[in-house]
Image (cartoon, rainbow, N blue to C red):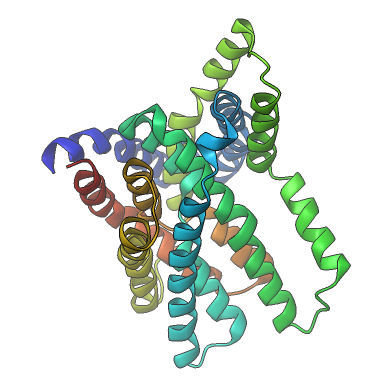
Length: 308
């Protein structure tokens, strides 16, 4: 495990540098917001497009892979919702806690780190996990909260979801890259070098932004946040491992990438959703803080296991 820790440590050290910069106010919240936008709209989008444009649809989409990840994640989602409802929390809070338990930081942490640690072949499975998370589970919480608030789940809601997908640069980058690949168009050398140069900023930029954003988070309701962190860092990858290795015929290497992606800490966009809907933002913030800190050890352990 020590050799893997030494490989993952630089990634988490970048998060730590960002956290320090945020704490001492060298990097104030306004700067974090703009850096996050640069990574989200430019650097990470360039990286995702380049990955997708150089892969075939068959290298990304595999039905067994999708079913394994979808079924395992749904199970953990239902467990987290059930625990929240047993504690007599409302349906909205239960859905937000379930989102914490299943939505990993695949975009900002998983894509840059796992492709480096597990090799270029990890790009396809990571993109598939990211797509399922964004299209299925980010949509699911919107539907649940809209329904819980008495809203009509009609064409307006579906239109809102569709517009949200179209405005998400990660979704657009992956789709455009797959279209480019599907048309068998070569990526011109200058364009490929431009995408590589811009996409190269995604890894340090995203990790630094994660750390800096954590600096402004306080810790409250540690018991619940601790449970959600446990669900995300332990239950989720465990359920995915069972589904991918024993229940569905998933390629062993792809299954390992899926398990590693499931072991990632709570995604920062869950906090954005919590703030937007006004549902347990402090609880979500604390879960992000705890899970990111603990993931230094848990993600390392998972990667050591799948590569051992």
